[in-house]
Image (cartoon, rainbow, N blue to C red; front, side, top):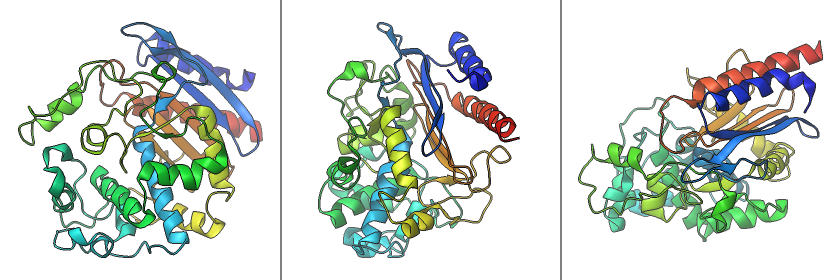
Length: 358
């Protein structure tokens, strides 16, 4: 281990020993060099303990949004198969009579379409599910982080790309990278995957406020190798625009470096993705959040997190990349747990690197 990062190592060790999280894998580096790469704790603690490894695969949860969905849309935009300023009612004609018909693809990407943040979409009849989702529009133009918008984007990818989202992402992105674990689940070898929640108790609790959910075959086992997100699992067979992606840290390093180096999309497309598209209190790129840790990294930094405990954060000013994957919701969901852990880790990393540059 790089001795400069002893404070980060001590902090993550402390988080695991205090049982805040069962375990995690953390990598810090840039486009060419690794500064820090360590694993901590356990990939699973119940029904048996499994040691965390650097190769452990994680349910990336909402990291699916920027890495698979937003990127796939921008690939289609770059190829001129669609234009991000098209209203979604033009791309998906079945949505032309809904409250979201005039919302553009760009607005969905930047979370400014007015769509509600969340809804248990598996409670809608399958044959009218997309129309029902598009009808959940608040009419507001504020930045509202919305899983629903990315579910619709997933369907746009499938319609325009003419193949399921998992195959499109594989054929256009991961095939050229030689990735072994970056892709949509389920993961065949469950023993290589960090466990998440025991059952979908959190999802069940949330869904009950929206209607009867007794017809859903709720999972009761420890979820491992299957997407944790209820919408992705119960409504879209584990492959959706909002969640469903899995990876280990090694493949995420390869992906992020290729993404930043213009190997996946052209530099001008990357620049379009990474600029501020909201100019509000909560700044958003296309897929990413802009300046997620104000004062700790540069204003150009961007990143995203996942409900399961995952994070990718990049500072283009210094080419810094931070990847931290944790199984924070195993064996049960604890809301608000990861944000202070992530922020403290980023603060420690920022302080170390500033000293190093002096």
